[in-house]
Structures are given as structure tokens and as C-alpha cells.
Length: 76
Image 1 (cartoon, rainbow, N blue to C red):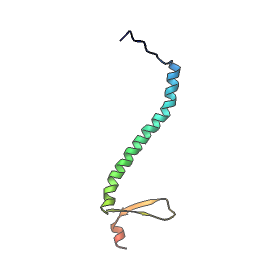
Image 2 (image 1 turned 90 degrees about the vertical axis):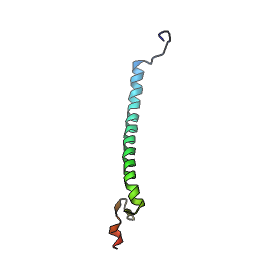
Image 3 (image 1 turned 30 degrees about the horizontal axis):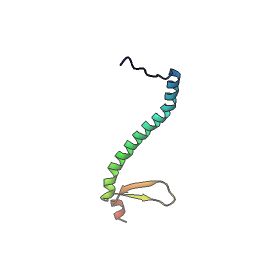
Image 4 (image 1 turned 180 degrees about the vertical axis):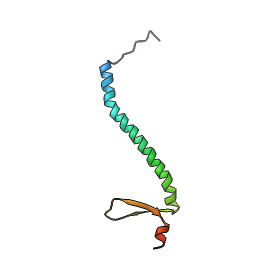
């Protein structure tokens, strides 16, 4: 193995590469964490929505949505 020659990039080029790559890698890690959180939320909410334990109500003109137990709406 010691007889093989390999090219090594200059240190300044390696540092520049990693300085460009660092923000991208941080964004990837942030997105992975957010995806995990959203997956856990979906896995918790979806069964309740599917079997009617929860309803999602949206007001026209209002961006916010609220999920509340369906029993509140049955009495109306």
C-alpha cells in the first residue's frame, strides 16, 4: 500500500470546502430533526383523526387551525 501515490488537496482548499459545506450540513441536520418531530406528531394525530376522536376546524380567513375532541361538536 505504501507504494501507491495519492493526491492530497492543499489545506486552504480543504478548509474553504468545509466552510462552504458547513451551513448546508447544519440545514440538513435541522431538517432531519424537524422531519422526525413532524413524523411523531403525524403518528400521534392521524389515528385519532381517522377514528373520529378529533376533528380539525378551520375558520375562513384565519390561517390557524384547531383540533378539538369531537364530543364538543356533537352537542351542537
